[in-house]
Length: 143
Image 1 (tube, rainbow, N blue to C red):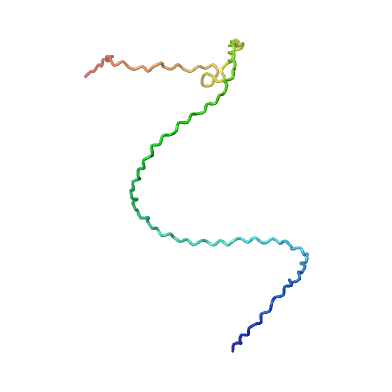
Image 2: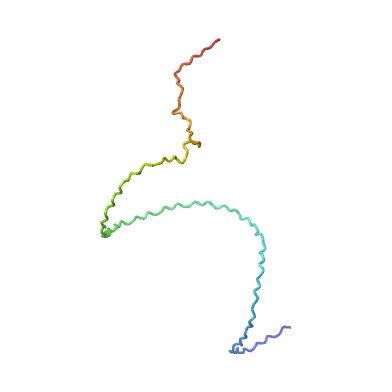
């Protein structure tokens, strides 16, 4: 059997705030939290359906030709600053002093040929010589 519902009387709340209780001055110990590795759960591989894109040709809409208005540009005079040109004397050309003759002849840093001091390269032909095709050759044949 259910209990009958009895309405509670509405009493006004007291306007006196509750007394503030002082908190105890107890230091909170700093305990590091253990770092737990996250479990590696493989993601399920869901294949994407291969739906080909429909090839819809784009409609060729010509761009409307809008004529440009014929408005002349105003001709504005360009301001030219009046800057005086300073009088700078021309530089005196430097006199050319001849270099003295070297007292000691210095050999080149790299050898002239392959590597042995004093060796000269073999002579090269100046041009390719071709055989004279007008020369007659006598061939003797015996039977």
